Amino acid sequence: MARFQMINYGVLSIKHFQVNPKKRQEVLFRVNNYELTKLIQSRNQTHSTEVIIEHIENMTKRESLFVYKEILLKHTEAHCFYTIVPKNLKNGNVSVDHFIPWSFIHSDNLGNFVLTTNSLNSKKNSKLPSTDYLKKLFYRNTTLNKVSDQHVREEFAMYKESTVNKLYNYAEINDFQTGWHP
Image (cartoon, rainbow, N blue to C red):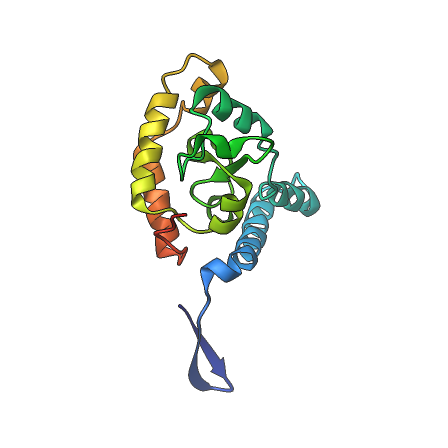
């Protein structure tokens, strides 16, 4: 809940409005980016505002997850992370899911990706899986971090379970629905 104080013609009135971060996250993110742009621009007169705004907006664009899908298919068991059904990832019915929703973290990291079916990925949407799956993700990442693939090693260079756990908790605090399971 956000609280604002407005002064109208010398009369103090307090207005309240409630912001649902999950539903309005994109708007809040853009407003925050705009304010960040103004701050950066005020301290760095060598770049135009348009260049800075373009750079910040590019931070929120989603990239192709094909490379991550190939890594996960190669180095993990090729089954749905959530259902463990091995045959449901056949014939292109495979999707890379952001375990902690992309709409919250705006980041693509191998340690946050799991394989699932297209339909389950759509059903999960921006929900947080139950904490049982969080434990399973940690175990999977420990195993994945041991492979010799250079790209995988680079992806896990900065990985920490504690960071993922904090992000999960922050997403929950920000009203992302928790406890999802198929």
